[in-house]
Image (tube, rainbow, N blue to C red):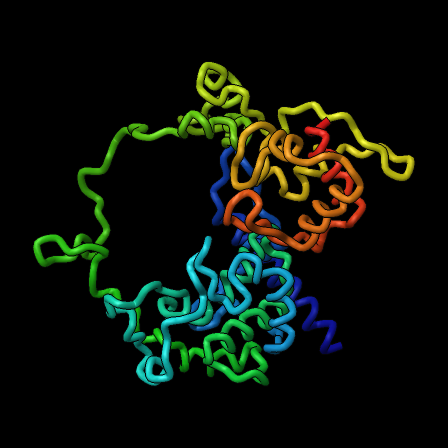
Length: 359
């Protein structure tokens, strides 16, 4: 009886909260809808410096090393020291820094390169960013435990924890007390000094506000259609719709032959008796983010790949291995990350498709 009364009371309170919530939200006819609780929960993943929002979980240094080697090392280096594309994560900190909470080398003019661990004051920032954005080819694919494990390995590489340390929602608070630059954050200065004073003082500016928006910069011509039709991706209300980037002047500019994968008409391939739209497969696996049809972007274009390689079995197997395990050096120093999440069958289809020029 007690449980039933408590349940009824809880439902009633939840209903009242929903009514209050609905009354507090201003709606606009024809624009949007209220987000569902599940949608809000999926979006609300931030972790604050006081660890509010940090989910329960745990990860070991050893587990983190395995994840690091397969999903992180190709971009950040085996020991987090890579400086070819990304700023190194590890380096520049000392045991003395962990005592003082202030990284001395940040003010050393002879320090060759600043690393992430030199600058970041809060360990929660690392957890939040890894969980939110890594790996960069597949953000939000690391589980909570994976995130704890990867962060534990980073902290181990930075000599902040030992190799048997288990990072979880409780021990991470101990780590915060060891962060080398935990006392390095200050709100008492601006970003630049002007005449001996900070360029900002932290107060809100609510006078002389701009009354009209002036567009002072635009996409460069070569990038005009790099992300398809901008006009179709912008919201349907408000003063600006964005340019239709599939129409001139792109055809009148240098590089007019540039086409994204979405603009090509690819013949479907056959796999196991089923027809597969390889262009769609290529885009769905984020390959189109780096490889355009006819212009080098982050990686070589499909046309360049087709011109360089033949369709011999050994060639296709070699390229499929690079896609699967990652590679660097053939087309520059920006590494292609491994794609362990893509099946070998799909990799083979996409490689064959690229070598044939997207046909």
